[in-house]
Length: 168
View 1 (tube, rainbow, N blue to C red):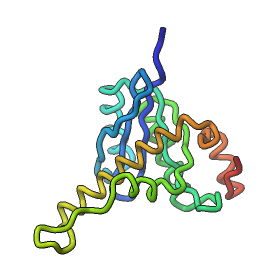
View 2 (view 1 turned 30 degrees about the horizontal axis):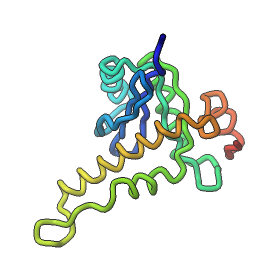
View 3 (view 1 turned 90 degrees about the vertical axis):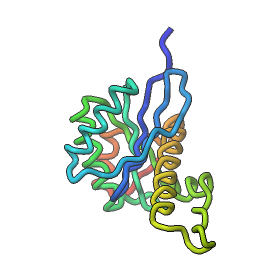
View 4 (view 1 turned 60 degrees about the vertical axis):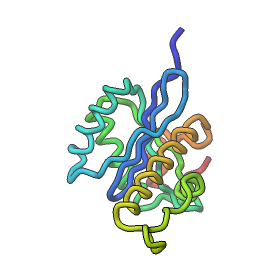
């Protein structure tokens, strides 16, 4: 009997890539947060290694739509990046509506802890907190992947990009 499909969820940001992976039993775990490479090809090479190590069979990329469902500039950039990466790593890709994932991740992770003197957190602590948020957002994307109402195929995403609104 075969297990569940191993999925790598990706929360793509301008500076970081949050990752979460499911195993063959469908359990979800945060994997890591990567700094963005200077190119899509650089990101793809690093993700190809991670996909091979984790025996990933599917990519699920968070699609940042506007709160009212309209296609955003960031959604366009994410779509182009994801299609290129999926081609480079030879894996199928789908998109997951990630509206409100940042807010939900912040609720899971909480606020960054204060600095040693009780003031604002320092740069290292802030960066660690941001990485934890990106990883939590990727976990939420992976959990949402199980909800068919939130999954958007590549063909649907491309069709909807022209209409500027995602309809469920």
